[in-house]
Structures are given as structure tokens and as C-alpha cells.
Image (cartoon, one colour):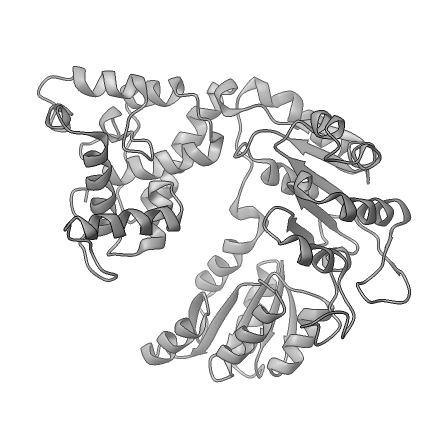
Length: 453
């Protein structure tokens, strides 16, 4: 993990740098924001720590104007609440007080490091995929990782990188679906100063950032055909042309790519270049959908239940048989991502000594079929769904959203993550409820009640 520290390395900040390096980070230092910007443009970084006394707002405004999305953590002497609030208002994601605590620095690094998303599996359906990944990991062959959305394609890519001969070097990811078409070329290959409006300085692209390491092209089938041709040349020649550049730049990288589409179908339809497909698909790692991996469901449920109990300050609870049967029977169209959100909700909604079928709710407020049957068959259960009979799904959904928002003390982002919906969907729902006269908790309002506390 590449950490850029911006500020004067005296005393506590120097100590933070040492702690970061002890936790596996490769640290680069800049005295001020101008030097920090130049390092970002020419080398890139996975995380930035910046002294709170510097112009954080101006720095963030500049990197956003240049479409640099590296997370920024502010740090300062002591735990001055005013300084922390100002840093967060300016756009910093977190505030770390100095002198640094080793555990806190380690947690910050882990939040953006590869190990924060471990590869967890037990089902025989994954054995062949893992064996093939282990077999080809140390080669430099390009790999295409395919599977439905949410199956864990990026986690598999990180696993391959860790097993490769390049594991000590950087792992750089580009989400081809999330970057506008007119910016993706510059994001991949970089640009020279003045190449287009807003190109205020030379900036390296992801190919150069990944030099010596691994580059993951996530959801590559979303890339337009014109850029696919440039990508093919870069992979074949091992050199790239910066936008506005006059000479090619040599790169040494290993390419991994992911897609949730039928690639052969995309080639036949003319949406994806056949020659690029052949170049990338030297080896294919096809990840089965979660519904075909029942043993994985069991271990993942236990992992997520423990993870979210800890992160929410709730005593861990076992998963009872009714809940596990319901989880095993559901088809999980969203795969591991959907399962994770469902277990997160269940941890918060469980009211007994264990997580039962009563706590298993899907994002729309409904239950998996076996959870519904199990919940209504338990006579005298304090968490029975008898009270729900006669109510519409819309009413149940509204109460679930409001209760979750209260639990999160009005934090919209946290509530949306728990509910498994986008922040935009949540805001639309809340606007609708307010129009209907329903009281909606404001940020900072609410209380943690009724969730097994």
C-alpha cells in the first residue's frame, strides 16, 4: 500500500510514518501541498495523510478537479474537536489525532489495504478455481476473471496478485464502468500538461502507477471500442502513449481483467474486440454464483455476522437453524454482496439470543421464502411476524428504513449500506415519507434501541 504523507516530518508525524512502514506501507513524504500534488501526478498513491494546518480544502479541490480520487486522512496534534470538524468539512474522510496510536494507524492502513477483503471459501465448487489461480499466479500471463456481479472477482484478482512474483509491488485498480468515457483514456495512460482543458500538469496514468506490479481492469467490457484498440496496443507492445505525448513510455505490468458479461456473446455482437479478448483471456477464472456454493454461504454468514457485530458494538450471536436454512435456500442474485448486506441487517435486527429467521429481511422488506415460513411457524416467539399480517410491504419497508436510520443516529450513508440500497434510493424514500407526514430522523438524531443491545 502506497502512503503519501504531506506535512513537516517532525516528532509525531515522523512516528506515524514509522508505524505505517511497520504495517507494510510504502511511505513517500512531501513538505507541502504543492509537492504532494506533484507526487500524486507523477507516482500516484493509495492513501494520503495530511497535516491539519495545511490548506486541506484547497488541496482537495485541486485533486478533484484533476479527477484524482485518492482518499485523504487529516492528522493533527491532540484531539482538537474544532480541527477535526473543519478537516471533515473540507472533505477529509477521517481525522487522526497525533501523537499516533499504533492500532489506529494500522486500522487506517488496513481499511485501504488488500487484506481488508480476505478470500473466504469452503465449497468444493471453488476448489478448482483456487487450484487454477495458484497454478498460474506466478506467471505473467493475463487473466480474465468472470462471474456474476457480487461473486468476488476483485477479491480473486487481489488473491492472484498476492500469490504472484509481483506481490511486493503495487496492485492498481481501474473501474472501467465508473469512469466517464472521455476521462478513461487519461486515467489509463496519463496526459501531458495542456493536452486538454484542465490538464494543468503532467499526470501519470494507471499503467505507469502499476509499473512493476499488477493492473486490474475491472468490468472491462464497459470500455468503448476505440479505447479497446489503444489498450490492445499497450498490452502487446508493453508501452503506452500519454494523451498529448510525443513519445511512448515503456511499462512492465501484469494485466488482470474482470467482467460480469458473456464475453463470447459480446464479441459476436461487436461490442468487444476479439483480438483483445484473446490477448486478455490467456487463462479464465470463472467464479461460480453463490447459489451453487452452499458451503461458502455457511462460512460467509459466520464471517459477516462476527464482523458486523464487532463494528456495531453488539455482542456476537450464533445463527440458528431457521435462519441458516433460509439463507441457504435463497438464490442470491446479488451473490456475496447481497448476502453481506442481508447478514449486516440481521445482526442489527436480531432481538433474541441468536439470529433467527425473523431477522432475515431482504432490501425491499420481504423475507426469503423459508425465512417467512420459519418466522410464522414459531408459536409464542417474541419476534413473531404475527404483527406484520395485514400490513403492506410498503409499510414494513418504511418502518425498517426509519428504524435503521434511528439506529444509525440519522447517518444516511451508514443506513443505506445496512439496508443494501443506494444513498440516492434512501434519500428518495425519505423525501417521500416526509411528504406523507412521517417523521424522519435528522443527522445526529435517533437512538440505538431494539437491535439486541
